[in-house]
Each structure stands twice: as structure tokens, then as C-alpha cells.
Image (cartoon, rainbow, N blue to C red; front, side):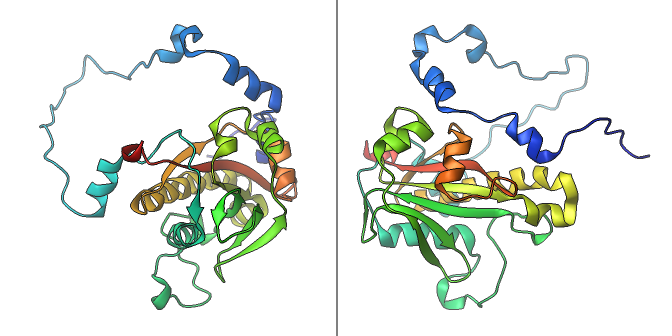
Length: 257
């Protein structure tokens, strides 16, 4: 049985209906927490009161190792990080996008530490650098195959960043990592459904960035609040085939605050 798609719009058209702009970001930022409506604080968990239940035992502490350290670090924060080194940025980029350590890497390997439907590798990575020691301020595209940065633009000014991300700490942090989806790459194999798989991949990649950064004593905050069109223009994205979907702002790790 085939699904009845009716008058379904394309994945890209749907994505555009969710665009945010500078005015929307400003509205979100301007509303104080004490004025948030009750619905924003309410979480209704799904329940099945008439069905049989199995009560799970209280779990033991997680086993020792990197996973336990990551859980303990609580590395997500919303406090700007004044500076990071190019070596630290290099480490985060490498271990986010490579399954092997540098000395074991085989050129041309497409394996990633995060899942990618059909190995289509729909995610592209960009760096907006402000105060990265050893790297000139600017907007960079990350070349995964050769582990290199390509400078697309000179420094993004604070007013420019405010226009894209709104007012707040994000515009003052040392660097941001932007993840985009290459729609053409995904739809070559999966058609319009490739968009769904791309969102799964971008979420997994964002989590990997946060875990790798946390292991390097760098905090992070995954952001979905940005003005889509200006950010795409900043990155030289071709709007018909590549769209920004997530941003990770590097931040002060919580235990150091």
C-alpha cells in the first residue's frame, strides 16, 4: 500500500515555512522568564493507566570511562567562552567527523562517529571564529577530507551576529560551529524523505560535537534560534540545495563557572 501524499509540498518548501528572522528572535529574547505562559512550563508525559506496568529498578552508577566523565561534566552552558585555541578547535572538528585517530586515518575514508543514512553524509560544517588563538577571525568552511579550514569571509562583526542570532551571549563567545544539510546529496538516494534523515544526522552530529568538546573541557550549547536567510548568506549556502539546521556555540564549561 502506498502512502497518500495528497498535495504535499517539497521538503525544502516545508523547511522554509519554519524560517525565523531577526524580529522573531528579538521577540523571543525580549520576553522575561517570569512572563512566560504556563504552557511553556508544562510537560504532559504520555501514560497508559489501564495497561500492565513493569517497575524498573533504580540504576547503578554508570560504568567508568569517557561516557561517565561526559555525564558528570554537564558541559552544556550559556556563558560565553572568551577564547579557545586553534588546537582545541582542530580536535573538536577532527573527532566529530572522523572515526579514526589521525595516525590511523586512511585518505578517502567516509566513516563518521555519528549515523548517516546510507552513508550519504548530508552534513557540512562551518566555523564562525571570533577569538580563536592562532586563527584569524572569519567565517570558515571545514574540509573534512583534508582536515582544513577555508576562509570564506573576514570577521563577522557583532552587529552582524546579533542580526543572525539576536541579542545575547552567543554574539560574544569565541566561536560557533554551524551545521548545514546538503539537500541534493540526501535526495539523490532518498528523494524528499532524505530531509528527515538529514535532520537525524544533524542531531547526532550536534551531540557528537558537544561530547567531544566536553571531553576537551570546552562547554557547548546547541542552538536552533537563528535567522535562516542571513545565516545561509553568511555561509555562501546555495538556498536551493543547502540549508543551515543547527548551531553549536562554544561556551564556558559549567564546572568552571
